[in-house]
Image (cartoon, rainbow, N blue to C red; front, side, top):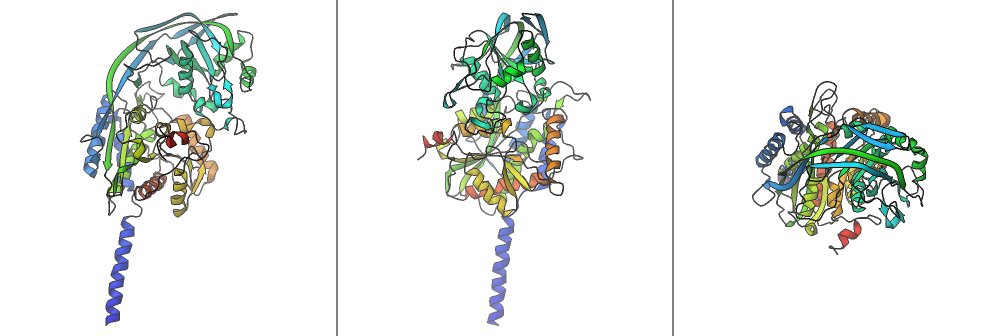
Length: 546
């Protein structure tokens, strides 16, 4: 009798234990996740562009969802963090006139070049402004590289190559070889040209080193661009910034008696010197300027034991709004993958934390940032004005584009080798029998193209995943094909909308489960992830943490 009673008691204990494990096991609910995407990517939300009705609807929706999930306000008693911004809308001339040694070349706006401005003035006019070729437009003392050395670009227009001098190479000590450094990003090139005193800067577009086709840039032609409100701060910006197509640049170089492709190759070699192009530009654009505020949305679950230590999940809620119609007449840039999928993931991971039997020991923060598509501005503002101190922020986990294709055996780390966050990811992936691989396209610089980058810049170890390519049952070639098709047909196009005939969210659930487990384990531990040797962000973190 006593033996039977003992067995019954033990059975109850085991069942209870299993129940606990089950409750704290896989927690991502596919139906809820898909519902979040359906709403956020709907035409009703008008492409979720800041400063529009789409922003108001998005903010209301996210705040409502946080409240319904029981997520606490993350900014005092508010779910919002105001982000002061300026909207600059160009009305640019449709033709740019170039005076060359072989006559006038007229470039067509939208087709041959794109342009915008960060200047808050009513008009910008260039009258026979000289053009200078400055190689990659890079000043990198640590690599002994200075494209502007002894090159006069003050009050001139600079033309520079996309990516950095290491592109296409296998010498990881020369810049980072085929892995893009920040020197390869267009944002850096515009910043450096401004520091050098240039009036304008054009990057030469080339699809492979840029990572996307020219049509992606065309979506911004004569449309509103957003920047952080810099009034009261000392800032330096060019009058005009933009892109020119490679065929156009080849034509311009040929008009000066030069072979662009030959010079492009020479520009990769140490010791290359830029030069005036013997070309003058005449061009004008009017600018409409509007100051306003956008918003980051922020919620939290307060930790039970170490509430002043923070794990921050991020995703950008914005997309491109209503713009130029595509061939079908669709003008709403819904951004289902980019980034309704990440924002939906943020909500569902928050829900997963709330479904746990016990709240996490550390505070977990859910931050939906604004204006990522305009230049990572929402996360940049948060990094400059953090609600939670960087000294107390353990790590950041970013979600920007969650797998819409189906189940993958692998997942990729963007910025492989940067921090121990990828080691924690591997721990969890191993339990789920998944592989973790380095980014297979490091030359495209994804590490500098989403919001985790602004956390890395202030020293916070940041994890950012990229969709794997080993499609279960169909292999790597099929997986790579899917991603290439997305970049060509859907990236920053109206076609990026919810389409269940081509989207399969089983893979998204797998990836979200992985990110949830990484954050959960960190939130319930006392570990502080570190940057790895060789990371440019290691010294930043060590400057304020022991």
